[in-house]
Length: 289
Picture 1 (cartoon, one colour):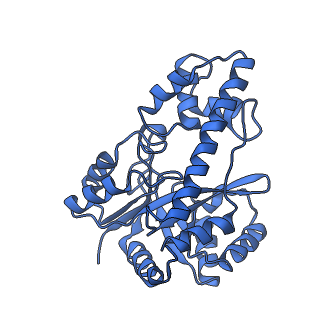
Picture 2 (cartoon, one colour):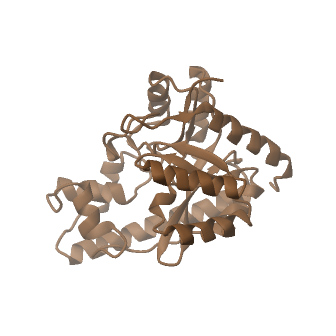
């Protein structure tokens, strides 16, 4: 089947600025054949997204981006085809989200001690009723004049190692893989370029996760250079993994990234969605939920 897909999208249910319905409308406007909502650590927006996608004639699956903890870094895993109501996965995601809320409180405390007091109410207003995360804290810092822009806010205050950074609870990657499998889903390693691993380290990490059921690598991604795409596709082939891709669209929180094409040149073929959908269908009968 001809057409394009975008398998990595965010809405107001995490740190995007568009509702699930608005994301679908933009996907339809871009002429996408398939799209998947992958909000951070939640599938609360999934029913609305799937309903809107069906109405628009866009193929879809349930999706979510899970933050996993490895020494000195955070790795993101894209879960596809999960049952949002599966009890063990749902409970784990609640714990992760509670950890985010606790982390936000610690960040605000650090910012106050640094002479940049912003309130929880200000941050919630930036989130517009959605899940509050660091991008909303950054927006509040910019609004109050404590940072020049979002990038400045992250560099000075919110990135790992910055003055107001605080850790939060995350799952180990193997635990996340097991929970997703138990909910009838599969996992692709998100934006491997952002892991901070060199090629040898990344290969060892992919080998480790492949032994625990990793199904894909997000080889096609906003900002990936041709040599990086070739490296990641090579890894996928070596370990028998799917090649997935997406823009990581966040609306106004990542200006300039357009659904389906990122900055204008990303093209994820709908065949990537076909393969993802087929792999999900193949594992679903083995789900433990």
